[in-house]
Length: 356
Image 1 (cartoon, rainbow, N blue to C red):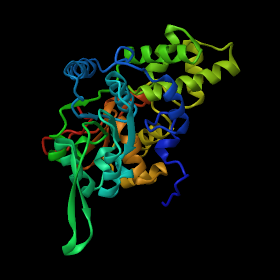
Image 2 (spheres, rainbow, N blue to C red; image 1 turned 180 degrees about the vertical axis):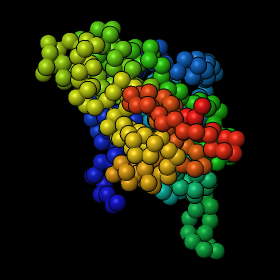
Image 3 (cartoon, rainbow, N blue to C red; image 1 turned 30 degrees about the vertical axis):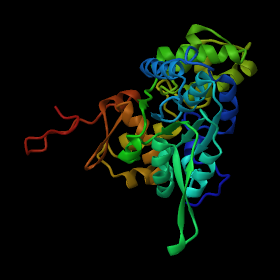
Image 4 (cartoon, helix red, strand yellow; image 1 turned 45 degrees about the vertical axis):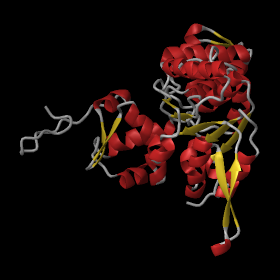
């Protein structure tokens, strides 16, 4: 299905999607912590990064290049801004898809100031020529600018001021080893625990002047899929409900009622997630069933089911991918309040998934 640039993708349309829309970006700018002390969660990453930055400041040098990997919405952009703030340096923000030619990268690198932080989001989507130029820039702070074409082309070396590259990626496995090896510090961002998300919700509510009690924060945190961005988005929607339907104070009852309106259940599943599970359980007896067949049953594109719905269902232990197709787990039957079918053994010594 073709989409123009202004049509939101299924991931962007979801209340529990981890991608940031324009509203999220505007709100996140106001809610972002300004230093490592304010940053909630990712304790090991914060501790390690604090040592890296303190040592660099003590030496009077630029910090090592930093690679941050992890799912969307966990704070990679926020950490890049904190790195710049902690080093007292300006930050330049760009993304891999925006750098399609080596000349694009050369233009950015040549305009950097000494000590500046360059944040390169989705670094794995950068073009190969630009990637190869980045190797030399990171290691030797130099790039070769090609002037002319054909046999008469010459390479002019261009010295760069020392800078810190902060690369962010949701798919670290797509980065070539030569690029990964040039980062002095690498960190993987983990999903947040419910307790950490409660702290995020309380902090955001305070900044947004929203009144919320402990049970209300816990209710929102429990449905946020371990992702601060989703927690903040749900908080805003619950705030709206509380202002219109109640006295503006978010309690557990108000939060649960608000999220029921938005079809986000107690485990953070939305309409698409439940549609996939219901089709798998009710139409196909729990599977196995092929991805294309499952997508047709749900009325969605194959890519939508595979890339938007399945990752969270697999992470929650509600769905399994097998060589024969998608299979529901006992937890999926329990979550939807359904009883799994009891099938006899297959006769070759193996038992059905739910067989005794």
